[in-house]
Length: 104
Image (cartoon, rainbow, N blue to C red; front, side):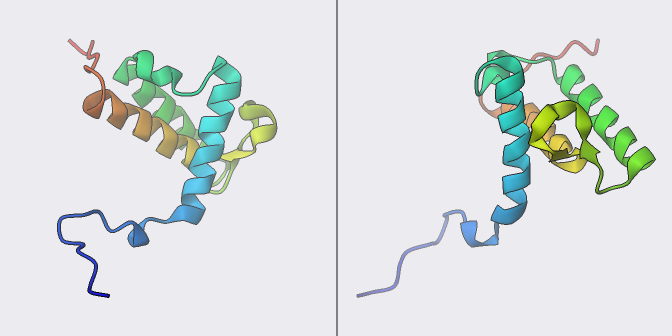
């Protein structure tokens, strides 16, 4: 058995799966809140995602970096996980769908 070719491929061994589980909880909460998974792929204004990120960061500043988002019902999402989820949704706007940009 020879060596596996890995050149040019993503090295998923460096991806923090335990922390990603916390971000997954935020996406599950979004699925419950909005009725389906991946609803953000229908298009969300990046300004709205940015505003959501800022609200979560503000709550982290007020209540602590390890604070839980009480608005997400039983999901018990860390605010920082919600920041990461919103950032991934924003990234999706630029990699999977045509971006909506209403800044100007």
